[in-house]
Image 1 (cartoon, rainbow, N blue to C red):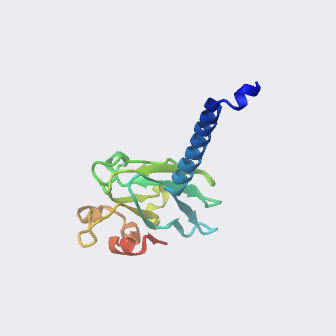
Image 2: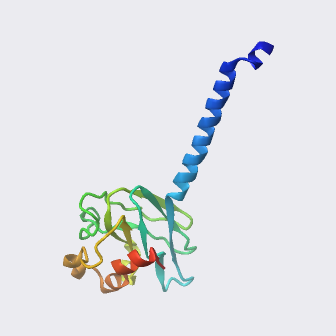
Image 3: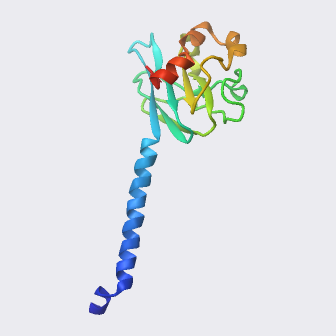
Length: 174
């Protein structure tokens, strides 16, 4: 047993194990930094509801986690997409999503790889203007991407979507 303490292979094994442990810690830290949170919430009496931030700029490969922080209401995060009975307001190559109803404290996460503008809404609160917008990578502020479908959104939803230029400038719109 004493001979093993001076065995050079032992040092290599311990070094490799330490390197793997360090890599795992760094990878976990990097993943946590790549995830952003959007809260789903509202006033105590339910008269106002919102996503916070309403809009955010992220990079391809980042994950968004929507968390229902509203103690007395259910919410969804749902892509404007024909799969969800709505006009297409996400990049054509992007994957649609629908979190289903999130009870207080529940969350839903999705990773975004396709650059572009993503508009989404809360199913029970779209008519109250509970909508959000993500920009993945970059977007052209001078050319609104979904103007041809604007008339298909409830006025409160359309009015609540932040301008692309504001998102690019501020990185997040509360």
